Amino acid sequence: MSTEGVIYRVAGPVVTATGISPKMYDVVHVGNEGLMGEVIKIVGDYSIIQVYEDTSGVKPGEPVTNTGLPLVAELGPGLLTSVYDGIQRPLPVLRDKMGDYIFRGVSAPGLDREKKWEFNPTVKKGDEVEAGQVIGTVMEGSMLHKIMVPPTFKKGKVDSISSGKYAVEDVIATVDGQDICMMQKWPVRVARPVTEKYQPDIPLVTGLRVLDTMFPLAKGGAAAIPGAFGTGKTVTQQSLAKYSNAEIVVYIGCGERGNEMTEVLTEFPELVDPSTGESLMNRTVLIANTSNMPVAAREASVYTGITIAEYFRDMGYDVSLMADSTSRWAEAMREISSRLEEMPGEEGYPAYLAGRLSEFYERACRAKALSGDIGSISVIGAVSPPGGDLSEPVTQNTLRIVRVFWALDTKLRERRHFPTINWLTSYTMYDKQLSGWYKQNVADDFPELKAWAMQVLQKESELQEIVQMVGSDSLPDEQKMTLEVAKMIREIYLQQNAYHPVDAYCPISRQYVMMTLIKKYSDLASNALASGIQVDKIAYLPVRQRFNQAKYEENVDSELEAVAKDMDEQFAGLGA
Picture 1 (cartoon, rainbow, N blue to C red):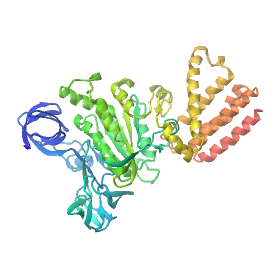
Picture 2 (picture 1 turned 90 degrees about the vertical axis):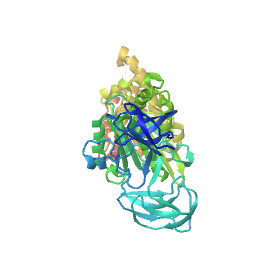
Picture 3 (picture 1 turned 120 degrees about the horizontal axis):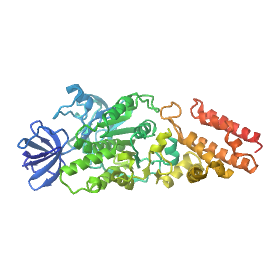
Picture 4 (picture 1 turned 180 degrees about the horizontal axis):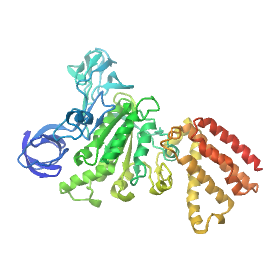
């Protein structure tokens, strides 16, 4: 098989070469500068390559070299705290080499080859090991990094293994004459194998009331957050990264503006992980591929990110993967597709758009890994539809795949209601599967409380149409009271300040207490109305203001107990 060829044609990031006879998705080096690319189409003697770097100045006749290998991710100690570009080049290392601007053709390995890690074996000489089995551990910060036999390895007996300090390429064990080191390489477009996949029946607890109560996501599930510019996608994803009960966070900035990615890069190291008190970066991997970087690398970045996530899942960790945003990824596919002169689909996107989105989101799962550990990947993809149009192809194809839809609303943003997740258009399809967990771990009546709250909010929406036509004074007292209770659900419960030290995270137990108090207020109000007490007297009870402020108090739980006591006393004072 020939590995040397020449460039025949150049069309932006798409280069046609002859004379290399590659396989699909082989990595090649293009031009005199050895630009990295990937074979994406083969037509006779012509190999079409998407190049991950700027091709300005590259011309026909320059050499092309085929490596014979697919695009792989390097997996091992050193991933956490790293900041990579879309093809896993460490950006801090590149900056040290050449400053703030990356030159073409420059590369660096994904994992540091020099750093030594303290390896502690968990098997001994003579033990039989198989693919995916854990053979030792390394402490990476406060995380226990499990060293596993590569998934492609055959079963065999350990010839030698020893503890000590090793670099990622050093041999730590020998099994039937085959050397094993701490680093694995895995093709990013191929899902890592698992023993068994499980039904997603444990929620990813986020600390955001509107998500945990109204639209929960299961561990191993997939969710989409579509919304126009300024509706809070990035802030919501940062809150999810900081407070969700996932142990590892993989954040992919896929084609986002440079200033937004800069915000993530500067804020994540400063965010304090509530579970350890250390920097959130200690359990985070960042992939930064901004909108001014080559589009082909943007297309690869989501695969790099999900492969890293699968590696940590195989250790038995719960991983949350944030992709911000899949719209930019789809735009990269559209550009590459047009350069390939493929038949365009809806709005110019390629016909295989839905298939590529499915491939990505379906790698989310909760599974038993080859190691025997149970881990999960929860994928949360932000979608940036142009002009907030949710009928465009990327949003619609995403909604066919994911089972949770968190719709961000520009009208809520204008009303300063955050998070701007619209409770009437959002949905979750995990309700039935998760209800058992909520009953067992929170309260038996938690699902019923949630159903009651949604019913009140839907009634409010119906009544608002009448109010806009004839005014609220024409409504009967019961319906006026419904509007007041719905207002409490919206302003006290659904609104949440992501920057407030107390309100930013609300434990699921506190969510239950708050919702119980709102239901209690509603029941007491109904009794008061039946006793002939006017709506205005009920609506302006001082306890409502105290309830509204309670969620910001440092002693919030004891304050909520006081609110319950006040509520009983004040309604008793009305004669209810």
